[in-house]
Image (cartoon, rainbow, N blue to C red; front, top):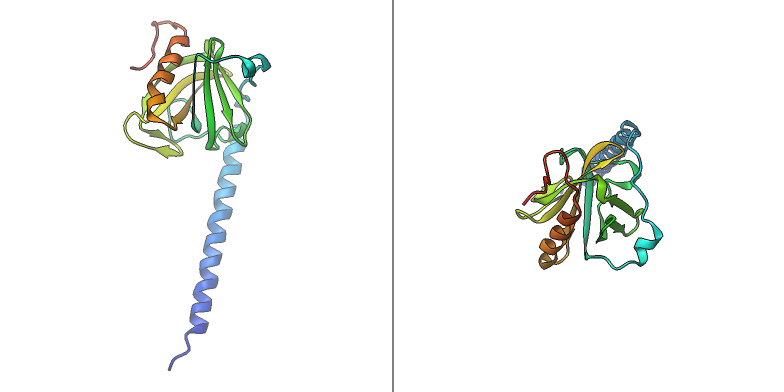
Length: 178
């Protein structure tokens, strides 16, 4: 009878080395992405009065990520904007409040909103057609897009509609997606 324990040990050690190498490379890539994105400013904090104010619409769900421009695969790593978390979205006349579990909350000012629509996915989450609310807005003069998935599908359209109502008119009129 053959003793394969040495071969299995070698395979096990090589597997552990490969897994560790992949983890190190992923960490290194994320760190380098954060270095390249240092020019992106932090989003506005949520003003205290909005935490107490009743929103015009709100929903529990998942903050998917914020990406650069409309490139849904170019996730922004700085300021925790690339971390997918459970969240609550609230719509106020002043803007959209993003309340995230385990990450800093932030405000998307209404004046900075460019458009809102539905899509099937972005970096970090791909779902059925129209399953994500995507908001394109200006962060320090740079166009970014933030994705949010409501926990209950029935909350998606009222939330999107409420956001559309606070999108200001820009040079070509309201560009809000249908």
